Image (tube, rainbow, N blue to C red; front, side, top):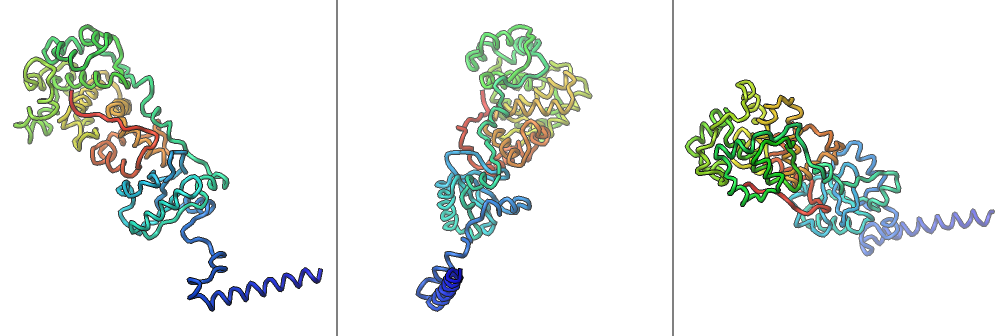
Length: 394
């Protein structure tokens, strides 16, 4: 027993002497000395338990740099591949003194990303020691957002509680749609052709395969349907002289003759004055990510199609909440990348896509061109998804 105690004292004395010697030779040993350096925590690392505490009052940017995608820590702000930090620098904080914590699966990739960020001038960057493996070991959960696309773009599509009715044959009889030109450009299926030529009890549905057919049908309806949007909105006031130069007017080439002859020409849906006012009010709050204009200024095909969709739902006495919900569903199939990215943005903040406020998402902050770009820069790359979008045109 006494021998053990003596050995312990000798070991303590040796450690003290070693530390003293390290301090005396600090210049030669590069700072504080090997022993103290070994004992001191790495200032560029944060433990999993410490990160859990920090997340409670989060005031830093949390970035997942692991590739390939294997999940993420709840509260992650963005994803940037560890070896593409420079290429995705637009997703990094503008202020290079912003606190940033990086993580990967085990720590190797985050270490490389940290060194790159330091070279870019970032001064307050740390990495999660042990990465997601350490986070899970400490009892933390991981999110897997790779399946979120199915939430935004359901396989069965989105179906309105409204049928096509006589919209197709009416548009053909008025000349708004030239069946031959439409068939050549859109190449509709036999079922879609029947919607165009005959009364149809088919519900208005959008899915991955028919999005172009639906946007073109609604585009034609929006063009011809009478609306105060065309008299009181920007197209009828400050841009009246340019009415034929927009993608939604001059771009419509699937009718008989000049598209302007059909603009605002017929009350196809028999909307009352009060219903027209409701359409205009909703159109002012609905955006699409191809530009910065609300649907109240339908200068492109998606804007004009969205206007027709609002008109169709108002004509069928749907309430505002449902109108925004279905508008979001249709916009999602027209601009899939935008809304999958938006869904990731909300999921990282604890809000499932099915629970988002559709009116808020359809507003300028998320659905305008500028708003969508801001959200995309914040979210970063979606490593599980290949790019797909939509252009404004027939």
